[in-house]
Length: 296
Image 1: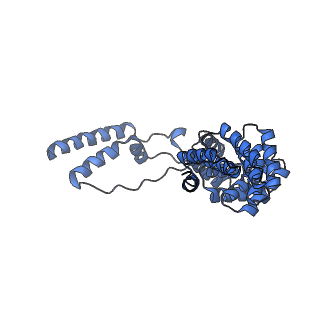
Image 2 (image 1 turned 90 degrees about the vertical axis):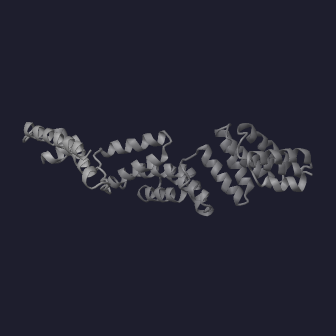
Image 3 (image 1 turned 90 degrees about the horizontal axis):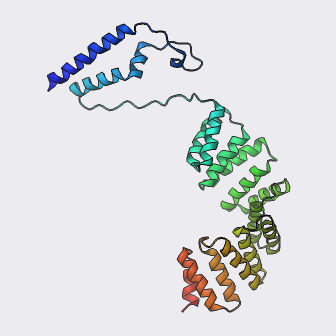
C-alpha cells in the first residue's frame, strides 16, 4: 500500500516539475496583484492558488507523519470599497439579517468612524435584536457628531425606555418630537412614559395624536385604555382595549388582562374571567393569579 501511494506522489511530483518549467517566470496579471501592490505573484503563491502543492504535501503527510494539527486560517484582508461595505450592511438590514448588518457596519466604521448614518444603522440593527445598551452607545456616538438629529434622538429614547431609564428616555423622545419626529410611534412612546409616570391626561393626549396619525395603531389604543383606567373611566378603557384587540388579537395577552381588570371594575366578572383565561392561553402568566382569585 505504501509503495502505491509513493508511486502516486512521484507522478504528482513529475507533473509539478513539468508545469513549473512551462510557466517559468510568468508576468503577473493585474488580477493577480492586490490593489495598491506592484509586487508580482511568486511561483510559490501560484502553486498555493492552484492547490497542487497542498495536495502533494497532504499525501506526503498522510504517508509519513499521520494526523497533524492544521495551521490556523488567516482572514483575507478586506478589499471592498467602503461604499460597497455600507451597501452590504444596508441590504443585510433590509433582509432582516441584523447580525450580518452589524458585521458589515463594524467593518465600515473601522474605515469611516464618524459616519452618522452608519452609526445610526448599526444602532437600529442592534435595537432590532434586543441589544439595547449597545444600540444606545451607537446612537450616543452619532449624537456627539450631530446632536440635533431627531431620528437618532428618538431611537436612543426607545433604547432608554427598554432599559428603564425613563427620565433620560423622556428627555430624548420629547426633544425628538419637538425637533420634528412627529411619528405615530414617537407619540406612542411618549404616551407610555407619561403613563408610567402617572400622568394619564398627558398620555391620553399623545396616544390620541398617534391614533390620528395611524388609525391602525394597536399600541396607541392600548395606551388610551391604560390612561382611561388610571382616570377611573373604566368603560372608555374597555372600549380602547377592545379596539386594540381587534387590531392585534395576539399581542401577548396583556391587553386581554387589562381589559379584564376594567370588566372587574364595572362588576362584570364573567367577561373579566373570559379575558383572564384568554390572556393566560396566549401566554400572559400574570393572569393565573387573577383567575384563582376571581374565577372559581
